[in-house]
Length: 125
Image (cartoon, rainbow, N blue to C red; front, side, top):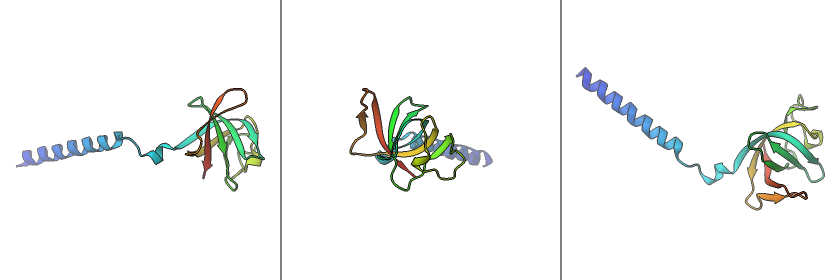
């Protein structure tokens, strides 16, 4: 009797692990694929247009980040890195930043004046 119970528990655990692995490998929904995290260096700051040009250190892509009014930016290395919630006016070129962003449906690729392609995203909290 004890042997049958152990086999049924082992079979149940194996089945549960197989289902969990299948659920984790399933494709994500469209909404979650639009969210991304950018860790990189600021190349340009345009305070009038509230945009940052950021070179991501992991994907080696350029991102033009639109920062809506009232959103703060996390500076990981720079003059204002110890500020709790720095605004776009406190971001300088060559600062390292960490941004949570979302892609917009309207426009997701752009080209700079010098011909480089950038991905247009919007910063979120």
